[in-house]
Amino acid sequence: MKRAALALAAALAVASVHAKADEKTLRIGVLTDMGGQYADGNGPGSVLAARMAVQDFGGSILGRPIEVIAADHQNKPDIGASIAREWLDQKGVDMIAEGVNSAVGLAIQGVTRERRKIFLISGSGSSDLTGKECSPTGIHWTYDTYASSNATARALLALGLKSWFFITADYSFGQALQRDATNAIRAGGGEVVGSVLAPFNTTDFSSYLIAARASQARVVAYANAGSDFANTAKQAVEFGLPQSGKTVTALQVTITDVPAIGLQVLQGMLFTESWYWDLNDASRAFARRFEAERHAMPTAYQAGVYSAISHYLKAVRDAGTTDSAAVVARMRATPVRDFFTQTGRVREDGRMVHDMYLMRFKKPEDSKGKWDLYDLVATVPGDEAFRPMAQGNCPFVKS
Image 1 (cartoon, rainbow, N blue to C red):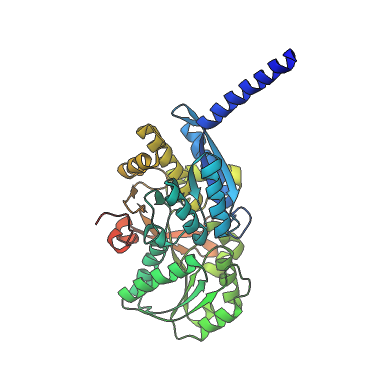
Image 2: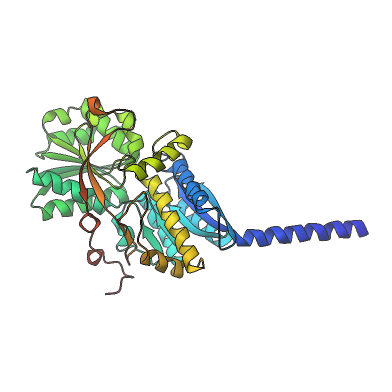
């Protein structure tokens, strides 16, 4: 009995030590699409980017080890919200990152706003995340639907291409992309002559492409992403859309989708990007490290995950606390200067403002390798690329 009592006491002591160590761990949760249509551009690569950021920071902070955990939200808002609640309420997660898929991102933002926890958004695009659905502890890092559509629309309008038709993914991301592009088109003197809504993750775009070709529009815009974009672009050639004389443009591009589509299909198409691996020496250095692990170049979203988490960890260190309000205040006060951007700043509405890039897909004969895909047309300063804060109607911004 005495030995049993001693063994029990020892076990309890060990458990207590582990519990205290567990309480000290700073946990970062990457909530992403691990197996669906956004998995290649986000998913495991975003988890890798998060772990690279933690490793480069040193693996600990304020005397606490840093742990990255991950989960698959399956592109379902209810699952994403449920995991976020469990992480924050039971798993001791201090901050959630990524949230690709705008419907899921908006659901996670609701949970983190309610619990006053930080959400660093990289994959979700809806500009509502810093507008009517903003959060005092949410920071939208990589891009949004306003910035992705604004520069592209203005460039094509400047070429005299005034009439537009949209093929739009029928969920919050696609709808926000079309809305923001439409506002830019009308502001530039253009008009939208038609649009169709395609179900998320559909594989047959034939009827939508036929409608686009039959329209009087000079520009057909793909307001979608991931496999939706890939299927639209490939099937458009089969239905003769680019050959019909219409100008085709993409409003959101993920580099990992491009090799499978092919430059033969995409060549010459204009689009706006938030980051590209071949921009400069710093971006290339990060990309080569990432590629060595992932065997693919990082997407802008994955680079954004690294950048956002690095900025967060520096803010925790400098603030001397993980308190969300104090950390967000420090993140806003500190310029973002890294391989992702040298011009970044976090606004009061949660928008991380940085330069965007008007790009054009290369011709196949001009590409020097699998990932040599884009030509830089113009750099768009952040204040021109992103929606002015006063127009977003974020309820937490002081008037």
